[in-house]
Image 1: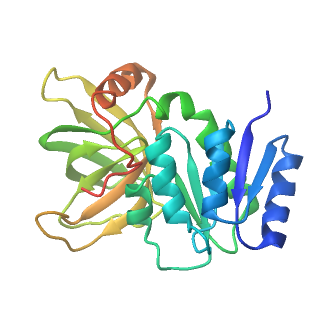
Image 2 (image 1 turned 90 degrees about the horizontal axis):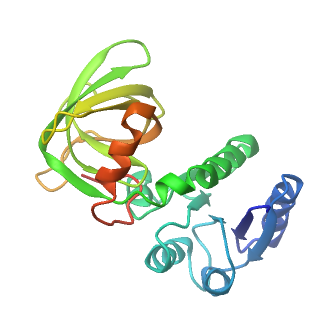
Length: 239
């Protein structure tokens, strides 16, 4: 069965253009011109992924995101926005799976949509959990340099890494490795830096948000079990 995508944008031309692209990729395409109209569709149709603008009249993208995650936390939402007033940190914390600026790369957008659907069986089972105080993580950056950080929370698709210096740049690819304090089980995989906070406070310390790109098969079941213990809408937690 072909997947169904809901395209949400108040600009009809762009909405139709995006919809046509995904029809050519064998998607069933539904469309809405506002967040309110989109949520009505979500409540009555089976949707696999939502692709939405942020700024719209009659219910913007953030309102839609909050309603969707309250209705069905597992339903992936991807933002396409021409404005810089939405930070990546906020978008991922509120549950968005990806954010693209306008104009966007069509191939990259299509890949993000495919990943959101393919990862659904795992990510929809993922829920946020506190993994322990000051859990040390070893990070190897793309160029081979090493940094260490601390994590407390895992999201449905990533983690927040608390670090004081040596911040990696956004879009940096990395490998990570950590051992759980309860049983010493090792979790390792690869990721991508999605946002960086270079200064912080006690509530929101300095660090970066990392999206999981892949988990080693040997630890996959362990991670799924770990993050199934409690629920959150956050794709990448803020702290």
